[in-house]
Amino acid sequence: MIRLFAGRRVIASLIILIILSVVSPLAAQNAQQNNAQAGANLAAQQRQAQLLDQVLTAWFNSSKDIQKLEGEHRRFVFDFVFNVEKRATGRFYYESPDKGRIDLTPNKEQEGQVVAKVNPLNGEKAMLKVQPDAPQRWVCDGQQILVIDDVQKSAQQFNIPEAQQGVNIMDGPLPFLFGMPPEKAKARYEMQILSTQNGAIDIFVKPKQAVDAANYKWARVRIEQKTMLPMAVQMLDPAGTRETVYTFPRITRNPNAGLFANIKWWKEKDPFQPDLKGYDVQVAGSATLVEDSAKPDVAVPSVIGFDYQEAQKLLERAGFSVKFRKGEPAVAQQLIHHVQSQIPKPKEAAASGSTIWLTLYMPMVAQTSGEQPASKKPAVATASSAETATAAKPATGDVESIKLPRVTGLFWKDAEKILRNAECVPEFVPGKVAGQTTDIYVAYDQSPPAGTIVPKGQKVTLKVFVKPKAGSGQ
Image (tube, rainbow, N blue to C red):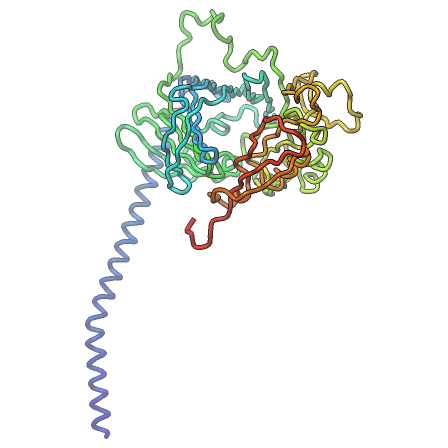
């Protein structure tokens, strides 16, 4: 028995030795491969970081001598909610250190055609109808930002806080036209070099600061290696449902004034001082060009459809200040001085103590002769003394008819509130699967459409985004 036990022990020892003789070299080989892979990854990361530093330094050095920049651009906006592609052309201007301007002119090429476009959020192909974008001008003169609507003959004026005046415009709304100091760029963005081929450099950019993240989820910038000037910029909005692309077919660095510099009868004297004679200019608040990191971000509650006084109380209790501006004419008496829209949008993050701008439905022109009591009228910020809002009136003699308000893009409860205030009956039906959680139960289609004259009590059908099914992978 002792010999048998000893024999078994010897056999077991031999088996263990055989296993170790096979496994140990394999384990050592795997460890060597893992170490080699880790080393290769580290080397690749170091090369990427070195290349990024080289590109950012060259870009910054090339931008330092730019005093003026102007050129042409083309803009494409791909909207995957409404399945449209909006196109515009125009010009842009820059003057060091803090002046900028972008003009948008509708581009009617291929209007009405349907084009295929891959949705960057889910990789699926979408069919988009091409239409010209609305004309608009964006102007910054270093002290204020003007957003000009030439169709409505109106402009929104955002004053730049005195502490931020003189800030280089690369810290503001035009960061991708110029190279900023490398350390500043890396502190503001996560950046990666995607390609350095065919005379161009492609850079992937993801914002780190809330002031940038409120405007885009990520961006891709293409600059020309020879001139270090931008060739194209692609941006995805925070919701992931709209992609905007700018291309720059022609750019002039430090353009000469030329022989006709003082003959300005054919264009505006100063591109940063537009002629707004006859325009309704509304003071819309302050523009934040740099982030205030001292104040924590708070989710903004929805007050759409609320009476302005109720909305103000709710937002002030949440730690925000509130200002008002006038919006569309109300289609019903019950909507007057109720919130039409808000900036920032509901559920977006904003710094505690910051200002929330509420756009209010206003009395129709036909109603303005009967003044509301002073205590019931909100202090709407405006630079013009006259109310210039105009609206299509209901059919003559048909006092029971209204013009349907637009409620697409709103959360279902907000859409319901506005429609019921307009004495309509909302009906909700499930529609497309939401691309992200913030779109769930948001209305994206309404029937009859906004602007339709309907009788009071009209049923309005709204399609809303729905949750992905469990296990669908969406």
